[in-house]
Length: 70
Image 1 (spheres, helix red, strand yellow):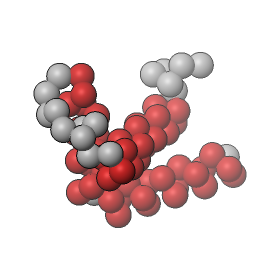
Image 2 (cartoon, rainbow, N blue to C red):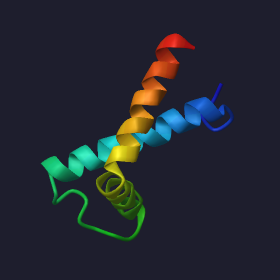
Image 3 (cartoon, rainbow, N blue to C red):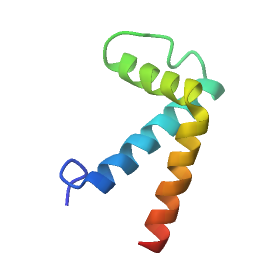
Image 4 (cartoon, rainbow, N blue to C red):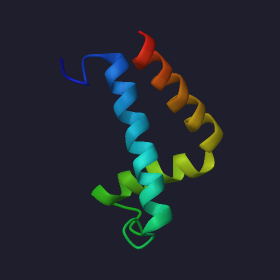
């Protein structure tokens, strides 16, 4: 089943994109300098990860627990 049709998979993909973009922005800031266009989407995901990091990390933890046990 595609991640677009399964809400649980969709949330997993969104959390992984946010965490990956935030990590890449911290390691290689020049990659996500552009704030518009296609790369702007990833810049926005990195911004969400930076500003909401406690909530994103809690979401990643809860998603991991739900994947392991459910």
